[in-house]
Length: 345
Image (cartoon, rainbow, N blue to C red; front, side):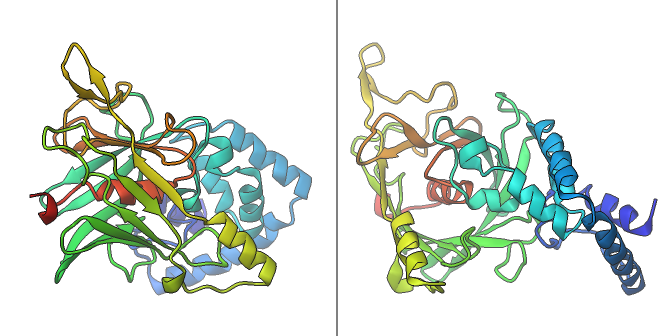
């Protein structure tokens, strides 16, 4: 085995196999300067060799690997193909369809792309109360006890009158200066209004700012069922957006693409036998909690749940999302359910 392959095999043992594709995270093993120089020289030689492969053959190889890796962990083979060289990465990105089309999360960019329309992507969140850290995992089975595939981590910080959640690809490095930094969630003093800042969007010609009302603020004191409807708005705040457009056509396309999407709590129904207002979580929520909620479109289809969040254990919560929300957006919205809200006390 070559020195380069030996180092790559060490990196592949980390908890986040996207790290080699996304530019390297701080949790990777350290190598000496001499070792790094030798690896760089060997990588340049290998890239030239692998990039000269016939395009049709290369595309067929990636397609077969992708077809045989429907779920994680086998799907890491697709990421490995994208890590071979620049040419392989371009082909892999062309073969692998976005989550809206294939319903799968493959690359880090998939976390900021909308989910599928026809069915939700099922995830779960684990909370660590000791260090105020939250971990998002992709569910691999229908069970609530599987380890899942790590996707994102967030940690709560207090900054004066505001609370911030730093969201990162690296569970061990949750700082804005990290290469794994994905964005942040910031609340007001009362904990009822939140802003989601996205610094690494999948569309590189526009940098967005999202605003969202707290979906848990409208929940009744009785627990899991809201007594009133609450609108949660995701919108582009042009006044706080740093934009770089290629041409006027791109500007019009982006404005149309990121038009405001308004979500609200799904209306509960009265259960005659239980004599209370209830929501059907289809077995994905097992514990009554004020944090449980379902969001639907305020206009149009009011039955399709676009985001569902609920408690299944002391520190475990399910999160199911679909188009037009991405995993990053859904995770940030669910984080608004944690913490103290002075206006609701």
